[in-house]
Image (tube, rainbow, N blue to C red; front, side):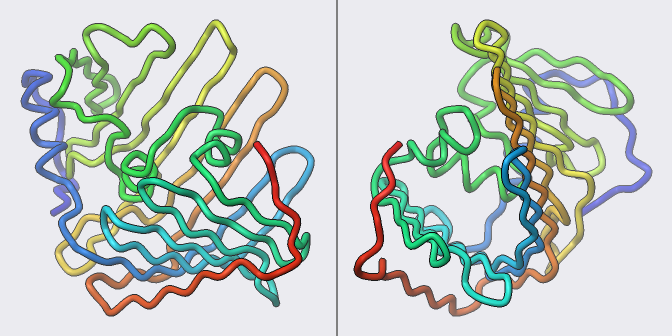
Amino acid sequence: MIDVNATTKNISARKVAKKHTEAHFDKQNIDAKLKVNFDNGKSKQALSVSMKIKKDEVIWLKGSKFITVFKAEITPTAVRYYSSPFKNYFEGDFSMIKKLLGVEINFDQLQNLFLGQALTNLKEEKQVVEIVDNTYILSPEKQAELFDIFFNINPAHFKLDEQSIVNVDKNLRLDVKYPSYSVIDDVVFPSAVKIKAKSKNSLTAIDLQYKSVVFDTDVKMSFNIPKGYKQLKF
């Protein structure tokens, strides 16, 4: 639950990591409606998006604006996508997601991004903690060679306020912010997700606002790439 009066305490990084891990999402299915604003400097769109997740199995997305603009089906091993207006499709690995976000990301990490959970397993590596503005900031004691990663954890529910991946040498940065959370069926769940992916020559902003969320319902997903569409390569 959310303790609105919670304040940070001088506890170990290990305990903060443990509490965040214990706050993981434990439902099996999600059926959600979102409002999504996308802006990469070249294209700007506002879409209604239906998102269905079978936890650890598949993330299904359909974006609409009067008509179906795109559909995507993401599994642990593959990404499939097509756009009706542009008559194109992608079928392959996670290179399309990397192109969009600027960093390597796998299925579990993408799923966690939607759920307010850390992109990496905080218990796998030793963490250090710093308290700033009533927030726990966790980071690995030994950062990876290619990037630095930081997690801002809220003491009210031990979900994330923000997580960032930074590669200074390549001028790459991914920031994922969670402005607020709601309690739905006793589950603390993000109300919104704000994503900014910055590279040397581009900036992509994706703002997600959850309009409705239902857990453990009978989610039905269909995905078939129409014939005659042109294949995208990344």
